Image (tube, rainbow, N blue to C red; front, side):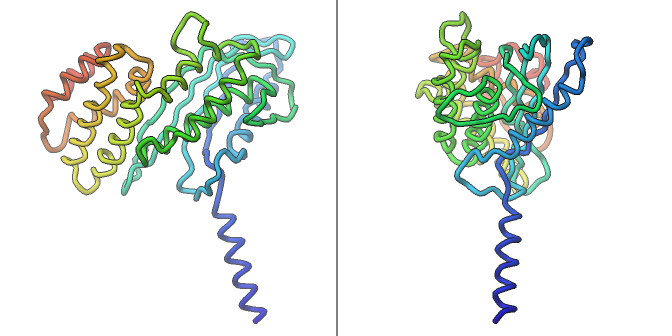
Length: 297
């Protein structure tokens, strides 16, 4: 009997250790321009941000190791003065494709208004209902965007809960005085517009397209390459619905910032599909990439 219970205990512990947090984040801080600042400060910033992203429990789900979302956070520091940091932030995430070792890019976002106060070794505290610092608010905002987008690729509009959390972070951060959270900053390319558009019915085709592109496109390619390519083409047609109402929309650009090169690769080899409608849609909704679309035959 003792042996039986010991075996059960070991199995439970093994199962728990097999579970992990949601993100597999790689963090890089570039502070080469800060020649008069101890570089160890930025090494510690890099380590603390990595630990914050990778150890915070972002969802109520248990993720297996292979389910963790691969993502990159690139922080490029332009100013550091009295613990105040001015930087830009690039966020990338990808998603493993079914029956393959290939990871498809899902997000490639650039945040040009990443300013925050950093005191070395001070604990990074996160509460999704309060503002404690702009550093943790921005990181938590994008962690939820990454998780929401990843969930959308597996089920239609599946990431709504986590986009809602990102929207909540945006709402309580607006009074902080930091840029990037407000509707009134003179551009439509900040955190406010990103999450507002994601949750708007007007831009629902972006999220539905993400789902179709991955679940009924890339995920089918290992078994039926042509059918997978047709699913990707259909996802572009869904995305094209936004163009009719909102030409050059932020989310349309967001989609192609991540997917342009991959789309070209998909349709420049393998079994032939009818690309005439695909090319018409691509050139209409993303004309800035027309040179790349010309490689599709």
